Amino acid sequence: MFKPIPVNVKGVVAFKAVGKLTHDDYQRFLPTLETIIREEGPVSLLLELENFHGWDLEAAKDDYEFATTHLESFRRIAIVGDKGWERWLALMAKPFVDTEVRFFTPDQLSEAWDWVREPFVEEEKEKAFPQPWQRILAPVDFSSHAERSVKRAAALAEANNASLTLLHVVEDFVLYDDFYDPVMPMTMAYEDSLLEAASKRLADWVNTLDLGNPDVEVLLGSPSGTILSYAEAQEVDLIVMGSHGRRGLSRLLGSTTNSVINRARCEVLSVPLH
Image (cartoon, one colour):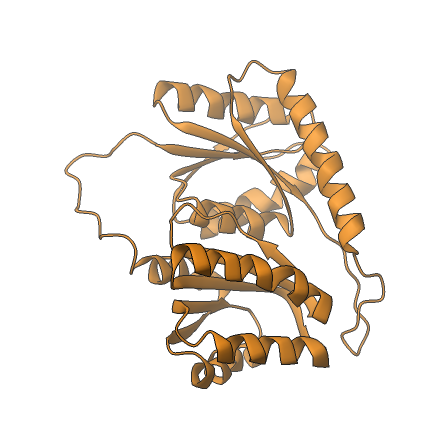
């Protein structure tokens, strides 16, 4: 399935492709992409492949037909993947689109974002002094330990007149057999129900805290990868996370914090949760 990644730059669109793509996936995805192209003109596209297992036959035809009818609709296309065979997707796409296509590994995610944004944003001049944070991101779960890191993020946002976004990641669990077909597929209805329940729970959780009026996002995916993608897409300049906790927080923001610290381009503040 395709999952949109919220982007902060006009002219750049980003999606995740997860699992094995089907005709139904393309029927939901392509109208959205066509609307963006119609409204904004040629765009740069970043496509992240996460646990990707290719296409079925009808989906492959959909992909080919769309590419051949939108030869001039893209400024640049970046494909981000972690498998050797996925690199060939960039090479295979080049004859069908009148634009440059590049492949990046997950460790090159920041480079991929810089490259797709380049046609639409001017290079920033070097600043003589560090600037205040403008966009702060606080990934959260619903444990009591999360309050400490979120309140620290809110205080920093207020002190720097910065925007604050609280992000909750709903992990998707899809099992595949040896032939790359889903044994336990996550249907759109089930996915929507998970996101709806998590959104309500996050809104209720935020209402119990004195945080002002932060933005909230609920996304489906792997925790560290989703946090990093969102931070890049939204040009976040500070991520505030808990360093450890119990049960859910330890799983979501323990090892995840280490991954984000090691891979994020922006500053990361690790808040002790003891």
